[in-house]
Image 1 (tube, rainbow, N blue to C red):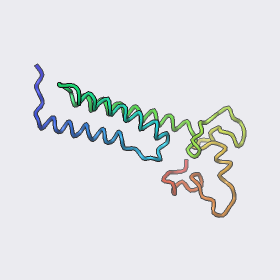
Image 2 (cartoon, one colour; image 1 turned 180 degrees about the vertical axis):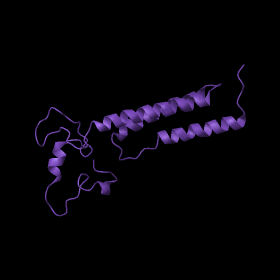
Image 3 (cartoon, rainbow, N blue to C red; image 1 turned 90 degrees about the vertical axis):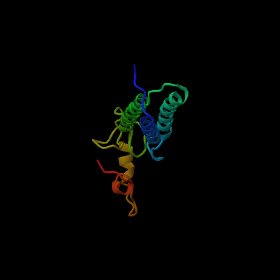
Length: 141
């Protein structure tokens, strides 16, 4: 026999679920691959909310755990996908491209050789993500 949660416990669990849904639907607009990520996150949030809205004996802690696990997996997948792309032009790295201005990764940086080649244009006003990462909220690698 399972013990029915108290009203206070259910309210706390519901608040926690809503907080996790808020986290799922809140990512910066300038995030790499924003459209794909927000669609995936909204799908998982909708799955959890549909279960809560339609099932009579729903297990809120399980739904919270489900959504948190899905968000963690989505974040890991997005990080791996982003690591395989140039941070500036978002082109996938192509290790078989030997050109000096090709799309192979430049040394151990997060940029492709084409962006590194285009970066040093020589004008006095030249400031970009590669030369001045602090202006764009990043650190040069």
